[in-house]
Length: 441
Image (tube, rainbow, N blue to C red):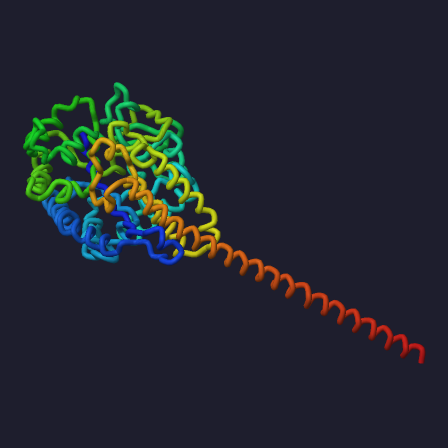
């Protein structure tokens, strides 16, 4: 039997409100709560709730034969808590079936793996904790933000304790090799690597409703024929995509839900494929070789690199600035400031500043609250400027309190000891004097 691994990413950022230069130093609340709630409610109704119900129906129909995996950022879980608790409950129901695996990632859906090892590890730990809290699973397979991966990042993930990791099956790292096998990290062979089959994944995620596509309309029967046409020696087809594919990117009217409902039936009746979770793939398949990735790769664009987030001077400046504040933020030990700092690390903020599409007249507009990448940069930097003021004040205050506490503690320790010692010496001297006087008598 050959394997299909279905994995879905779920994430929504905390979007920032319009924050003007004149707000700096006056307004210390940065989020657009109305927009965040309205977007999450909209996507919940169009995608998360109906898609989760469909997945639950498929599991009830096929039992342990049908298996899937999810990765939910910590930030989207927070939004479910605030704005759509029924969605969180529906994911809990899926977790209880035993047919769903929840993967690890960075809590804030951040780019910390590229910048700050300690912060990266802390976010991974925080994310694992919230997954265990709600779904009763401790993630053993890792999916980094935007599928970002390199040999060094993989080594760090292995050191944290994960046994497998997902990334993009980029052509420039595969060469002549197929993404349809299990590989290992080039530095740490214990870490298994699952590579996304981007062609078959994107046929569903991006091309499904494109009427100019020569394969439109796509139906389950046709898709399974494509699966069967894969070389018989290929062992695994990793289909990785955003969960918003179902009902949001591809609207209900396109027939995407019908396609998903019919797909398992066609696979079971017309092919030799079975469904496995990433953890099962890593356990049940043998790696064919190491995969060498010297420089970070991602899922984005033809380049499959970091340029969607760190491809221009605006992005680089914003990215550097927020991480430069890290040490000072953490030293304040202010939980609210640390939470804000981590939310400002979310990759979406830098994605909104990307000029690649804008210069080509193809602006990335999916839930983008800005008209231009320049507006995104200015808004973000205004927020960070105010945040830095608050951090500096809190840092100096906590530093002053600590210094006073240390000085006070030092006085308390020294003064009583000196007085006690003097008193004791005086007492001893008095006793000796009294004894000497008695003897003299």
